[in-house]
Each structure stands twice: as C-alpha cells, then as structure tokens.
Length: 357
Image 1: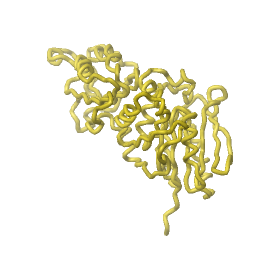
Image 2: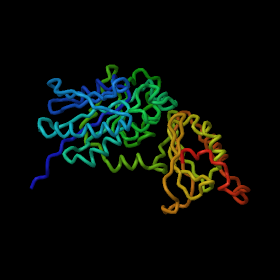
Image 3: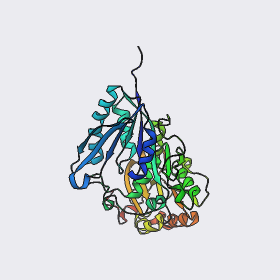
Image 4: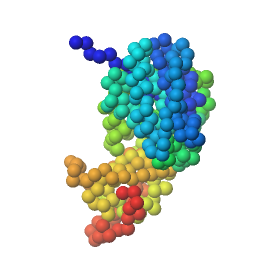
C-alpha cells in the first residue's frame, strides 16, 4: 500500500510584516497556497485575523478569538483545522504559513509534527531587518510595549523573540542589507546564533537573492537539539567582524547575591547567552540560565542527581564587540571563593531568586 501523501509546508516568521511581504510573494507559485495570520486587531478586538490565497488571488479569510490565556496556544488550536481543510482539498502541492510577528516557529513546528501527519514541515524561514537586527537583539523592550504581545500573560521581550526566531530557522532572509553599514557582520552574527541557518540577502525591493521556500531543509531533531541544547562547545563559531561567542565553565558554585548584583555587567555587550548554572544556596538544583539583550532569566531544570554530570556552571554567550576577558572576569567574580567553599554555610545565603526559582 502506498504511503499517504504529505503536503510540504514552509513556515515564515519575522517581526516585520512589511519586510515579509515581498519574501512571501516569491514563495507563492502555481502549486502553492498561503495562509497569513496577522495580529493587528489583537489588542483592540482580541482576535488574530487570517487570510488564505494562492496565485489566483484571495480564497478565504476569517479570525481566531484570543482571550487572556496563552495566545500562541489558542492560535495553534484554531489553525490546525484550517490547515487540515486546505490540505484535504488536494489542490496544492505546497503550503506557506506566515505566522503572526510575535509567534515563535518552534511551538508551531512541534504541533504540526506531533498532530498533522498529512503535513510535513519542509523549511522554516525567518526575515530579519539588517538595520534593526543588533538593536532588536540588544535591548530590553517588552513585546507588550511594542503592541506585539500574544495575550496578557506574554512577558517576552523583543530580544528573546528575535533570538528564538533566528535559532530555529533553516533560512534567514537579511532584508534591508543594502542599508546596513556592515552586512558581513550581520551575516556572521546570524551564523553564530544558528550555524544551521543559510543567510540569504534581499535586494533593495526586499526580494531574496535565492529561493527561500520548499527547500527540504527542516530537520526536526536537529532544530530541537539546537533550541534545547543550553550550552556546549558545539555552539562556538570562529570570531570575526566583531562577533564573538564565548564558552565559560566552572566547577565552583555561584554566590547568589553576587550573581544578582552582577547581572547588568554580565549581559553588557551580550546579545544572547544560554547555559546551566549551580547556585551555592541550591546545591542540588540544576538552574537554567538564559539572556537576550539586557534581560536575563533563571529557571529550574531538575536535580543534578538525575543527570550523569557533576554540578557545574556552563554558559555560552554571543556578542557584538564582546570582550571575552571582561566577561570571564565578571562571571569568575560571582563564584564562591576558596575560603567560602571551605567554611561557608551555603544554604544560609540570602536568595535573591526566590521569586523565580
């Protein structure tokens, strides 16, 4: 018996819908149907609007209601039946799904892989703005402040979203490259954030120089490994054009108060960092470390005893104009000293992270 036919799907992400439009136009040919989800009406009306079209023109449109819960979760729940209906018609051999600007590809791709065997995620393409990329990766502005939050509980910042969109992409389209003073540096930065990605420059009209859809590039296991792998030597890329990625390790625990006081110094010059740290006052816990722009976050990852690893600290940090020696010194200064290791009652230390861990 022949295997059931699957329809390849290209997933398009990126903060700027304006820059995405010419990229989307190149993706739609005679065999393709496009689903575009927009969030312009989300703040005022609580809905995500959608439209479906192919090369012949508009086919359908509508809206998904989003209440105060997880907007991304509700989008996925509402979107899957629409995709099922389109693929069941059998008129097209390729689907393009243009996600809302604040949507991360990972959750969408994971849902499609898990629940829609009739669809095969083929390529994940992210459009980034060469003029604003470093700024978007370096600040602390919340999506809510930009009017881009997917519901009230969405407390992500622009830097976090931008980094995660890039980290999951098979292709990054560098729009506005002609307006950038250092396009090679941006190319290098994207490769540091995601060595799996292919960087394609767009011309002044926003049209990519190469095909960026239906390429057969998506590898779910590889994408998940990169998105989930917090810190390892495999994340290191050759420094150049002012872009550096640093791996910092220590077998000593961090003093929680000194780490808290040093947070601003740690993220200074760092656009993205991820890792696992060992806090002295939480000796059995594996603690996730993540930063994007000027915002850093910590979370629990379980117990050290549940792994094959001894307790340690491991952080990978990428920055533009980053001074590796300075970062190393700032992190080293947060570790317990030799005398503290020998004589301190670790668990009696003040816990500035009690509210988040």
